[in-house]
Length: 333
Image (tube, rainbow, N blue to C red; front, top):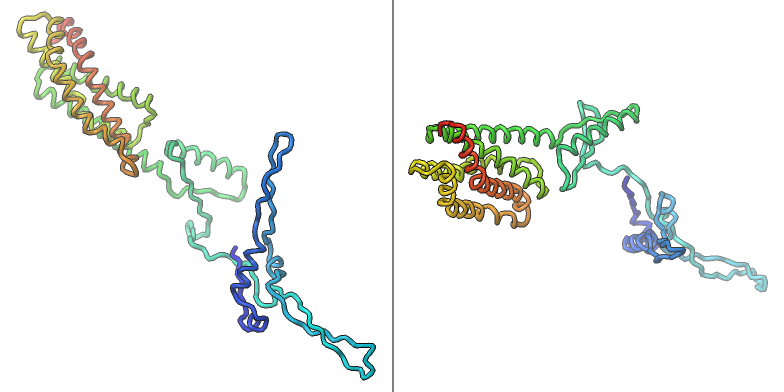
């Protein structure tokens, strides 16, 4: 509710009062003053002096000024019966010059569901919590509260969890499709099933390694991190292709499988590391951005960086071992 004080200008003039006088009186009398702290037995108590008004009567009985009155007293010593006038002052209450009312505040928002007047409630989560989990927990708690309060019905009109779930699903589909297309393109250009299989295995291994790095750095699966994975899906196989082609070329020179894997990896290791670092240098500075841009793209930049680092280790360490193992099983490479 809202307090409304409607003054009468004629009465104010009659009592020689101004609006500023009334406002000053209300402000000086309607307040809460801290009196410090009192310590006792290791406990501290906060002392406050409160004179806050709680009702219309408190405001109406507030003294806002004084008025002069004439009091006639009969003088016993005056034989002619005349009277003497003494000047006194009487308090002027707010109710004498104004009307005080608590009225319903003008609504800023009106909520109606199916034409029925309702009460709207917005719930916002803290930044460090997962939106989808918060929505699920709030929905569960609303059902518990509704069962405990007969006659009340809670209805969720909209929530960000539904949108986020849908968006994450679309990003997942895009990431999976990107991986499949990358494998198809590899087979079209390499034209060797064994080589395509080895390079294709670099994608899931790099993604699992990326998930581990994300977990230890406190990153969750969301639109931006999944977008980073989708963005880096094609780059995950770049290093693997360079390494395996170098190994294959050394094997064609007559080296054994083991020697070809060692020499081929060593020949291109520096180039692969340099290439990966130059790409990381492009994305990593984004994590140092401030404001909304930094908060929006920081997770994506970390995810791309982690995926590239993972693909580098997979190309240098895992790809040569896979090549040796599959060659030993006489898979056509």
